[in-house]
Length: 321
Ligand code: ATP
Image 1 (tube, helix red, strand yellow):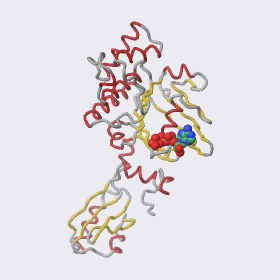
Image 2 (cartoon, helix red, strand yellow; image 1 turned 90 degrees about the horizontal axis):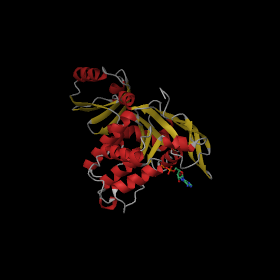
Image 3 (spheres, helix red, strand yellow; image 1 turned 180 degrees about the horizontal axis):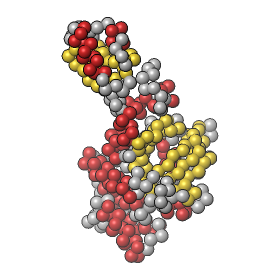
Image 4 (cartoon, helix red, strand yellow; image 1 turned 180 degrees about the vertical axis):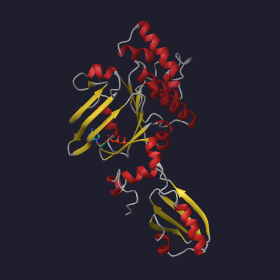
């Protein structure tokens, strides 16, 4: 398949009556990439996942999995796809082996092929030694592992996981995150989640969906560069006038946080801290605290999806209300 994208989504739309739930999505997933799919409730994440996985037909647009058009050849496209829906499709009364064998059969794997696939999936998901356990008696974390095992059983190129760590304890969450990172090494993974630190922990790229449109699509490495400080919090014993502070080169806006604490908004500027210190000494302002503030993924998320700010995916982050 070479450098071809594992998933290609073009001009994807879905309408439910008057609700335009997904509005012209365009993106690609590359091999070896874990893509975090974020968005507030009702943003259209599940609708998009369902369209990518061939569970829901788009109103318009194209989805290709490994170069195969999902609408033209759904069976071939779905061969390359593993899906863990938000509610794992498990049969609680089956043992792990019975369930995985059943899934292997659904995937057209029989006898030795099925056995090999099951052993491999169990090993990758840390389920060795649990084959004979009844699914309903497993902890939620182990049930989730079984859900992931069924998604990777047929060695698909693309794995789509919808909120895979919801309801797990911190140890289980860490284990499932490690597994997701590992899957990203030789599969392409799309991970839908509400948990921002999870995206930071396991994803290479993040997309934020808001009202059916992508408002952010960026490599996390790139994003952390753009998260360089854009504001500085300062405390003075003898605060100067606001005019004196806005007069400092680079300062765009001054916000008062409390009696002696101010936030200076500015562009990324490594030398500004030095200028503040110099001005404080010269003006005898009594500077006793200076903290460079970075925007967290959470702040970016809120900025893009709350109120009117959402249109500014690449706009001036300082453009205040
Ligand atoms: P959540 O995080 O709450 O799961 P989401 O981002 O997954 O939200 P979707 O479930 O995709 O959002 O819903 C997007 C929009 O489409 C919502 O306004 C929802 O009400 C609407 N919608 C989804 N499915 C249907 C349906 N079958 N019929 C009518 N409207 C629907």
